[in-house]
Length: 592
Image (cartoon, rainbow, N blue to C red; front, side, top):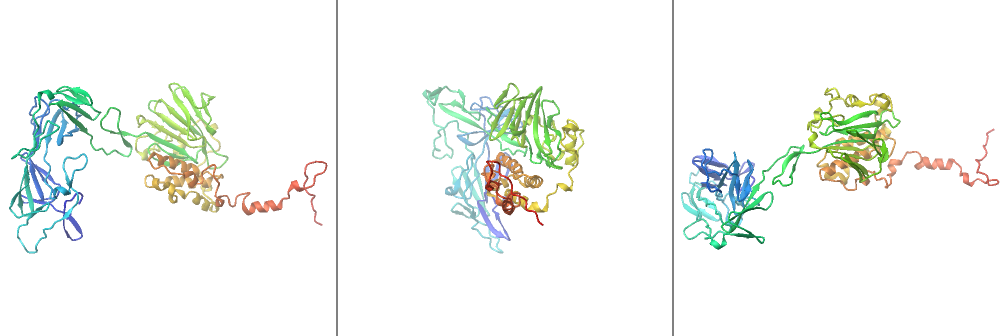
């Protein structure tokens, strides 16, 4: 029913668009077909018959058997080069289409179909050559039960009886045949002027005026161009001086639909954007949770040194991380990240301390031919010259971005970057498994000395205690229930981040352990254009903001526990001092 000009009476539950009955065949509206060099099109009860007009924008066109029209050897029109498989349009002739196929340029002009609505109800969409009906109308000719009488036709506000002949315009002759108007429309030839004259009496097509010899040159923006000169306006549009008037052509970019791992990008000097592979992003956060370059989400609490990502094909770089156990039996966090490019070693440590080849440096810092290191929004940002970028907050949050040129040649905890998430858990020896612990352990480096505790698979003791679960769920509910994340929720599913938040808040003894998951989610939201506003306050992660009372309730030094402690211990400063000596505790009262 989209773009339907005439709606038929309902038959059952659904309405339908009026079609066309022609030569014993019923055609749906918008149907187009060809026969003997003619073009037929059905538009809501009107069949338009036209013959496309050929046009050759060159001096010596050639006839080839693959084409109905003569073609030009070179794919150039009005100075604009047309690339293979692309279309080009001329502003003065919006219905003229030129296409480059097999190195030859073929141009045809087609007539617009006759519409069942009046001129006042027609509009032409931007970028199209033919008008459409702005509002659908109901078919006013209702079928008479049991009657075999032929139906009339209605065009606009005019009523035409069966087999009557009429003209819609000087170029179109129509005949009403049992409710379908069959119209033969003449296609006007392509004009080579910018200002056409109205059709003379007795003719239906506009014509070009006679060009004076003195006006053989074109003057555009104060610059004079001689007959046949061409000039480029931009990457998509060129012009040629023809008969004293500039004639321009503009390349039409095809409508592209990119895959999820691609994006539309327009290169400098190019007319049309292309689908190119997007950069890969791997994120490490919290107790540690990993999101691979291909979107695989998993958690791995190993507390050793691991190969996060490496160029396993050309060996241009490698990144290793060291995880710390935090004096726990099952939790860990990323303590340092080390990047190697050739002989250069860059270490990112706690509190954003940076070392290059063992020497601590101040930021910003430039390593000539290797990388630039600086600060941005409370994090360290490293931008290398080989298409690699790292973001480190100094407290366990790490984001690695690699250029699409590394696609299919990476390995490590961040996966292989091949746009397939299901094969990211491939071990060092090439086996594909579905066990995060075995997968992560296979990428351990540095031996047992690099571990901060004995490596054992997390067991039941890592589960959240029932007494803590209520607070944990409340900490992590902002993903679904706070307006700061409402816009992003429609673009990025927060499920994995919420699960990570629950795990971190359960296993950690601090009050802001859940914030790593919120930060990772906020970064993902920003990348898709839905940056959450004031999410730090919404998730109780603002370092300068107060903690909610319900979160601190029950902790040592808060509420009734603090009051009882305050009343049970005497105020030492109130005890009298002797000879300016230190205050002493009161004597013990022994029971008899």
